[in-house]
Length: 151
Image 1 (spheres, rainbow, N blue to C red):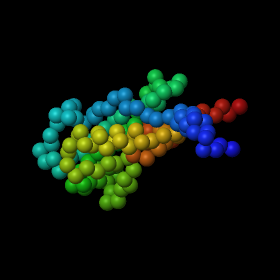
Image 2 (image 1 turned 90 degrees about the horizontal axis):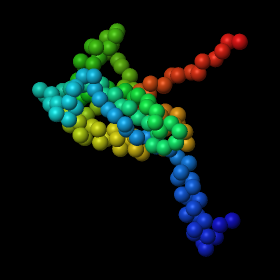
Image 3 (image 1 turned 180 degrees about the vertical axis):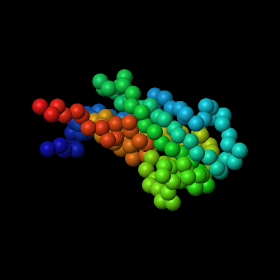
Image 4 (image 1 turned 30 degrees about the vertical axis):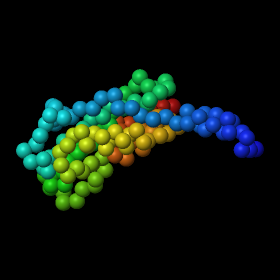
């Protein structure tokens, strides 16, 4: 049982517990649709849509040199009808998973919002962290199932 005089023990337990959690870092990001994300300005800053690829890794541990890809589509609300026409087959109803809306094209603001979310995510394993990030950006291993030998 810890008493008030055991503040050093409590601090050590807290620091030990904090080390149990892993976070993600953004190693790289790019778009196949826009060459210069910061310099680009759409004709109408309230009407745009593009794919963003994020390359993430654990902040520490044996997997920190690995890279996992996450993909998200970012668009303005006015772009949604255009997006719905591009979906095969075209539909008047779509799901919004891995889709981020921004009223105006300001890549610095968009990236800051995504970065803040990613940095807020913690987990005990990389899979736990990646699955939480998968809520906003599609993880390349989202539906991965390990190969099971039929023997």
